[in-house]
Image 1 (tube, one colour):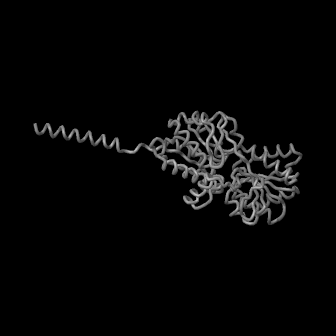
Image 2 (cartoon, one colour; image 1 turned 135 degrees about the vertical axis):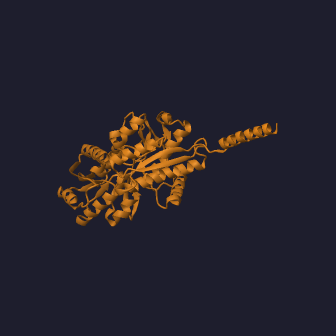
Image 3 (tube, helix red, strand yellow; image 1 turned 120 degrees about the vertical axis):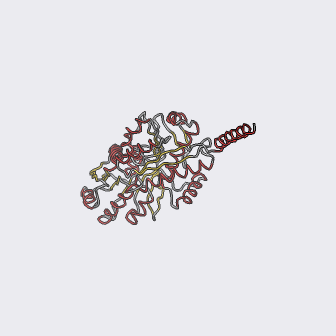
Length: 373
């Protein structure tokens, strides 16, 4: 009789232990992927985008995660190489991520489209703007405008406010989906106003070390202004070569170049450069100032535009999963919500998942981006 009682007590104790472990164990985490260039010429862009996403995850976890599930970020470096981008996305899918934030450049986004389509995973990019992905019913969404908006705005400003009529452009084939679409849209908008792009010179950032021959070719066309369509690292190097030959010719750059690296790497050579971008560094609103303070405390540097949009893209994904935690419903959920609060402005998705942002024309003055319009 005593053995039976002891056996029953042992059985009850075992059941109690199992119940306790089940009740006390934490819910499984929700894993989100991130992919971007974390090494090479685009590292400043990738690191800022990753950091912005990490900060958004920190805040979400402090608020209890998603229905008690902690958020984790699984990161991959695409090194701005298509094969590594595809491999990175496939690896993230093998880790059963619920969504992917990234990539950070248009070329890498184009490279991975077939991979995400086959798996039906949602990808939300902080910075990809190529028109090659505009108005498509796919699983790619983004939180910024397409190159057409930035190119159109820049063309109007250079023609009307700067009085430029003959421009020469240099662009990077290593991100050709972005650079070629930007140049194409700019040329169209500039020529409609009566201007002309009299020379266009291409290079590949993965191979080009010396920009002197390209700069000489640009200047040989005798333009009244130059446009650089490249990463911050390449743009800074090109601008230094330009200033070594011509100190006064006006130079404009695209939003891709508008990181803090452009100023630190370019030095005096980038003073006076005009840069179109979607980050308003004058923003004094409490929301942006609080974000800026938290970002600097966490990472010890300014976020730049990629840090802001990395944070925004992560919060778009978080908002969607809070509405419906099933990853297979995420695209429909996000397109159903449509409007999301960003750090500086609302993010409005159209039915294809494309967004728009206000564009600011800025000029580098005394090592700072100053908004001129």
